[in-house]
Image (cartoon, rainbow, N blue to C red; front, side):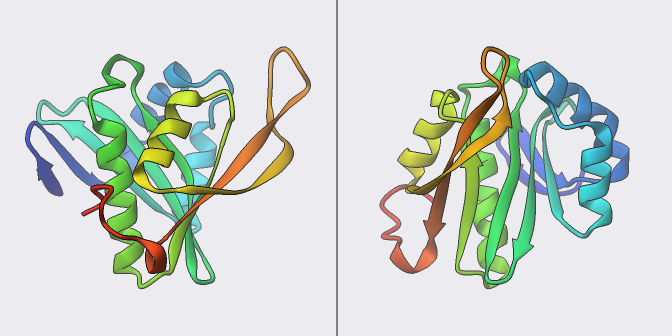
Length: 165
């Protein structure tokens, strides 16, 4: 087992060998999931992926990060539905921040569906602030598209009172 150990979980780099499981968790968690090919393309293009697994080896969640100029863009953060609410999302977010800091970048940017209230609350509690909105960004079932809230976490403004360390 390689990676960062977190009690009964560990985080390690996402590899091609993880992608079948990653795509399966993605399908379980989202109505409009990324395809396995989206994850393959991300890794092939040099984006950073990490997987969180239970010590038994079961995939709990993952995230994909893309460096852009002086910031990191959090493209995808997902926790398996059966373990949501256990702190896995927060642990993955902390890892994303750790990786971003490690690359010497100024902050972390993301988009999130307004209807994903659990994720919006997580990001707000962590210290992300809303900086904009992208109209008609996501596909949606009962309407043609759903907007995205654009949020940013800036290291220059952090006070570390939110538990990012």
